[in-house]
Image: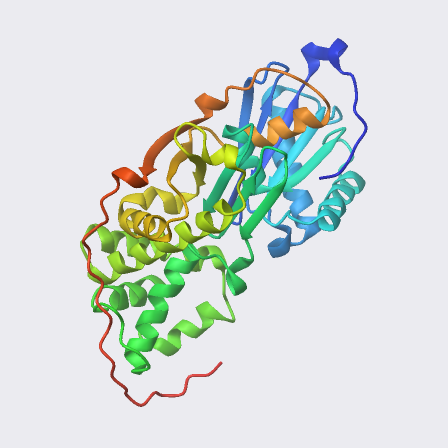
Length: 375
């Protein structure tokens, strides 16, 4: 985060307007709050990941959202917000965060007086957990973050689709396509029949043959569009397709591994809280929890690393957490309703857990000559 001068704004309490943006690889949300922390307006916007669209375009999209928010509140464009919190995908590095602020200030000087920049994971966590815990984002991409009571942050994942994104919609879509490619090529048999996934892939991508997939994977690759194929895998799960169910079980295992990695570095106080280690689960992939549940919990249980944990979902946008961070940056204090900002959807306790009886047999080994399709 960028250090900035603390300002006493108490005498301007009635005029306080603080903004926060939660930015992802697919969409973004701006919320503006008043002096008491009450949300006044909400604005939806597009992707604000500077690694994907560049600093200038990111700044332009942020400005457009703030301008719309000001219009909704009848605030003149020339009047800056007191502070703007930016909790965005891709904002994990101090140098690039500083560059983003400089770009915004130089191009759009009336957006806000002060800024605070952090990753989207921090904004999500601070929406519901003031004293620390874990947030695990599983949307288009994935990212995990632990904050200990001493304020130290530790990450796991968040490296993008080339090196990471395990547990995300992208990974689900990629794994489904990979099983089809390997099965059709004869490189390796899919763990379950591809009788649903292969036709679904042909239909979604309009790709009658494997070679027709290449533009979607390389020349015209769009991460959001590609990741949306995961919705077809969800439909397959709802229809009881064995391969789709297998893929989602695997995805649950991958998400559990993020939590296990972070839990090893979590302070004992967090693990000993009522309900155990608290994990905020953010992103559309968590909507399919019931398809991932057994793989997730069996992985947690088999590791013998955690005795208890509670999973929460936010009941409000993580842009609220970005607002909280912005308020703290200018030393503005108000009561934050953390408990109302999230709800528990699952509680695990080792002594009460009965492992699932699902059997996922190893695929039989067979070898068939492959056709060359290098790109």
